[in-house]
Length: 212
Image (tube, rainbow, N blue to C red; front, top):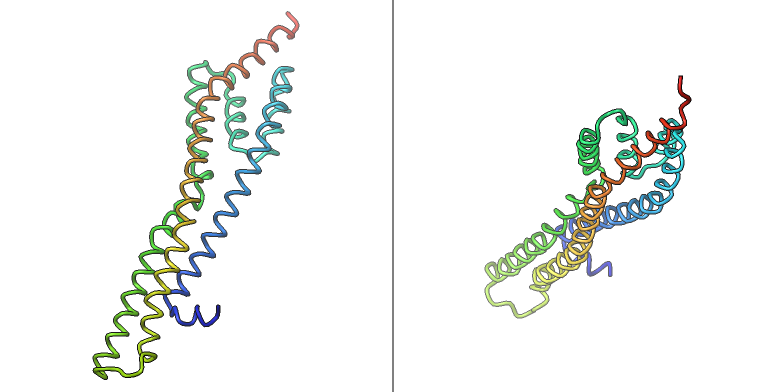
């Protein structure tokens, strides 16, 4: 394995470095999406119970202890509960769009790795081939094929390395982009439900409020 890496040259080391960065991004994003997915269900049920009782401070405190993008959306709705329903919807849509950078964090970097890894492999192929032809140019006919081995090995190994890194990077990039889009669409659809939930809490609070 070490001999394989050494034969790949500097370009292969760069490709391996990119593979480690890509792996770190994938693991971090998968853990993040798993965490916010679990928290979201609990968050909605707890906040709904507090809002129905008119305990808005308690509902906002629950949002503060949760890192789900939905928590920021709910908190924005509660903070602006005195606005009209149309204004609330616009504010919630703005709040949802502001969560996009957090959801897309480092995903573009993964896409860049997926695109440049095969190009680096191609670069290694070109430099390795140039090295092999350079040997032929200096010595003419070469009786010992091992003299050309270094250049040919670099040419082939870097190509393989670039493809091996690019294929899973493309797969996970597309998966993560789809995951982000699904969450954003879900948040957009939940805007109306959140507005109804918040205004239902206001209605309940007005009924329970003692008349002067």
